Amino acid sequence: MVWEDAGYRVLPSEGGHGDFAPRDEIEISILEHLERRHGHVSYERLLSGAGIHNIYQALVEELGRAESPAVRAEMDADDPAAVVTRHALAGSDATCSETIDRFIAIYGAEAGNLALRVLATGGVYIAGGIAPRIIDRLRAGGFTRSFGDKGRLAGLCTQIPVHVILNTQVGLLGAAACAARSQSRKG
Image (tube, rainbow, N blue to C red; front, side, top):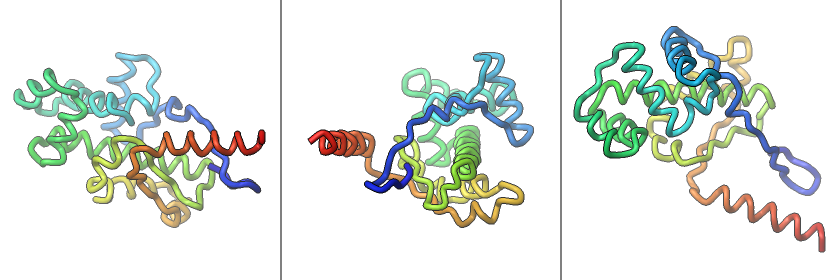
């Protein structure tokens, strides 16, 4: 959002479909794994519910991380991202924990990239269904480290506040606000 005379204006974007840029050998392996499956690899392939499962699969299939038969059985019966997240948060499976930690690091890195692209000095606001569920892990430091790991501009990134929006109705509320503003301009 950007401030204009009458208030904030929402800028639409499909930025999540921009190219994923790996930052280390593990992320390069994840990229290669996903390229073989999908061709183009966007951040959406990693930073979504399906992305959590994609990261998990890459860690198991590409990097040989251990896969618990119990976790696999749960994934066959339930949403794989929910299973991975549940085990990661409970600390009951090392591969699930590594998956969520990697998800958080990639999320932080891309959020930091966005903050630099638009000089979001007023803050970055994270919405969606995943962040509120893993907020304690987000606060643990991996997100912030990746967000600020920007070389010469790391100092700027450390000054940009990051907030997680907890209201699950924020999209609906935003749409209603835009509709109300549009109606008031017509009237």
